[in-house]
Image (cartoon, rainbow, N blue to C red; front, top):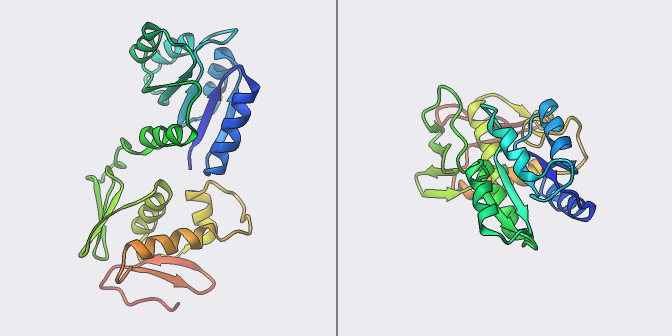
Length: 231
């Protein structure tokens, strides 16, 4: 899950993107022009910005120029009906990571968002690009898991969940902890999203996935040398 900021002066576009991206598990904030977006970014950490170019009170190019002055700013995908190639090139020169024309395909936009959110994420400090526990190697840069039976690709949520469990190996991770750290939820919504994601991971890590269900506790990723926990 990521926090996204949609910057567009058209309420219809903002509403559509909010519904679509929220359904994919993201937190979506909205701004209606460059100035309000800059104010929002000054008070809230955002993982990625979806930005229109032509808006009143500060257009997309103005916002890109302002963000360029910051040492650390989120990736920006430009969404625009502007057909002028020079304007699109200018947006890229100012730091946009991608340009998507309007009208756009929701599926294609989602794929581009995933690409810029996850494919270039650096490994956490002190890690060399891989985690290796219990006969499973997790590639932190290519978002795939490797065991004795080969490599499998992971979705963004599967990757985040597996990385968390592996970093906390031999410790029980409660559902509340996983909901908070992986889904960004401070409460239990009463759904089985954690269990479904764990089932998908187990299926991909067959035949002996080292993820145990701990009755009344949660889940534990155990080292191969550690006895299995009661399930």
